[in-house]
Image (tube, rainbow, N blue to C red; front, side, top):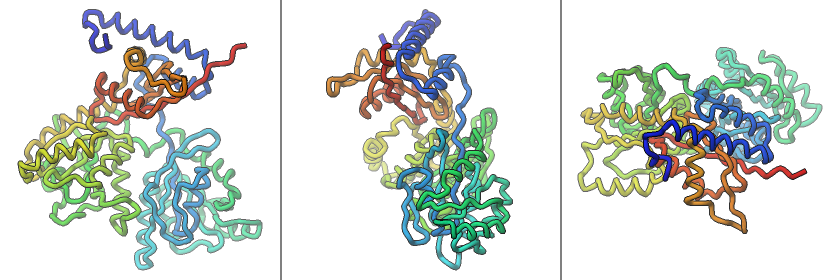
Length: 495
């Protein structure tokens, strides 16, 4: 009998039994090698899943600077691996601009602001705009200057932005490869940002001191990476490729021509916030620029619009991905969905322009969804016509469903009872004569739900996907991604 098949006559007895089982499993973990982080996680689950407090989100450190000053080399140095693309050409851009880094046992998010335009006519304006975006999304900033070249007019323009922001800043005097470069670094005191950190990102000179200083100015909790706390209006980002009807949907929801709508793709550049009453409650909707292509392929205003859209997703709680139902799904549509999932936000997919869709296309659309969006079958779907307002009122119901799942927590007792039944019915396959098993599990966080499994061995990706699928079947989680991590722990040696 599964957890959901138990009779309703004795729910309290079932809960007590689940709790007792979880306590026994938790006690059994004492026989295994646990580190301080494991113990902290388990102590946080002391109420066995009933605590509603959110874990702190990782602080964000942005690396900004002119082209070819060594930002990407510095990013690779901090990460300890070659992740960001490096070439001896200014303006080299890259897909991924956010990385998880760690120094002295403390994790943080590193944002590489590669991709600045190197068109001489628009350099100052673009650098300023990019710097503003980076600073807006960061808790602290590393401002990289080429010590051999010295401060330029562009650098001084960025300094004014940094001062205005009030964010803590570390001035990095890069390309100081030997003692002779120290004098060049000292000259950067004139920028007025405090002591320049003489560094050679290429050779690692001074990088340790720089990172120690970075940790000193980074907060424990990020003020920018997570959406605002509970209690206020829920924040919704309208995202999608250009010309799918995001602005039309926002106007339809507000009942007014709040934003410009045109058949020409790319009318919206900057995110537009609008407070809307929907379903009897206030919501903050953000209309964003369409995500045209990968960040490294975007140029000019499109590049900065893409970054602002990423920022809007990061600050939202739920994203409505708007898709044009009248035309075949594209790689861009799928990439936008994946971007929301990667950001850990709740998700609703709105198939717009339903009134323009040929009835003969409907079975093809269903087939496209089965093939291209098979990994997000859990996302609520709503068919709408923003132009005629057909079924637009249904959006609120799906938003509520997704956010309820995003906020939900499974009690640790029930979670471990579920996993025990799952493992008994479908144990992990035996590999090389060994069969890993799950010792204990806890939900470490919500928004989105994050589960940590302690196991005796590596759990294969297929088995992890099976666990996630069964979690959804048993507990719902419609409209939210689920993060599942496994910690392999060995038994303590007997003394």
